[in-house]
Length: 301
Image 1: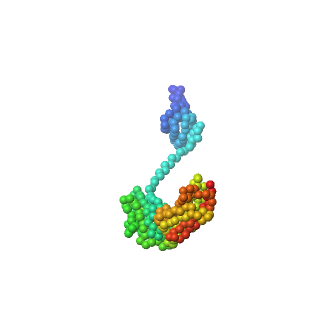
Image 2: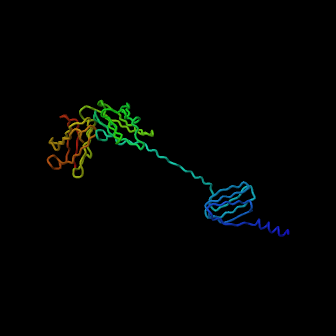
Image 3: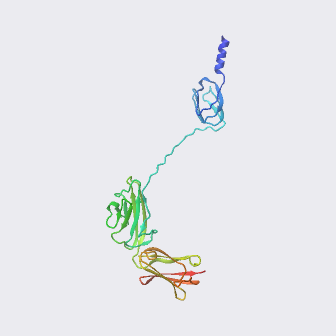
């Protein structure tokens, strides 16, 4: 009888060998002394009544567990780490947009000269809609809400077109124009630019040409200048003998005759129909019968 009981106890305590193939499994080792197997799962969890709670990650590796101590001992052929997954949620807020600012139908660079009675146009848009009670136009630090615009200054809610024309002409000097767009969700954006006004007849700065020298057989040259106000402009080119080689007229408000930056081309062809000879040519820019700008152009073929 004692031999029979001893055999039963021995069978209960014999090594228990098993293989794990599930995605997750739990081994409760209170009833065994040791175990071993081949792990094909992506994760496993071992629990011991003796305060062992070990979580690891393995892949096609063998492991063994021996209990009976204060903590379980786990050995793997791969590095076991405790993994923490962090989920980051990114929320995109759609802010209002302000399109390019057009001054009398043209774009300008900061500091450019414009007419003293310039008209400025842009377009506002927002997914939540533009709030005309909080959106504004600011001229030289004086703000006007879109809902309060009067006269020739308007905001069209359907198209989002903002048109600004000052009730009084701008005085000579530097000015700043700013648009603040606020939508119905209180998101906002702004766009600003500085500009200059000079009511005197003439050109601000030098007359510049590029390339210079230039070869008419390969490319034209550009004649550039900053005109103070819209004006009828005439450009004359004379050769070194004082003979007229080329003459061109530009209507007020057109390219070559509008306030601000102007750029016109000369292809090296005279008014008589042929390419001019090599040499130095003298440029004269005339407004209202007055020479307001001078320059030199070298032709080298």
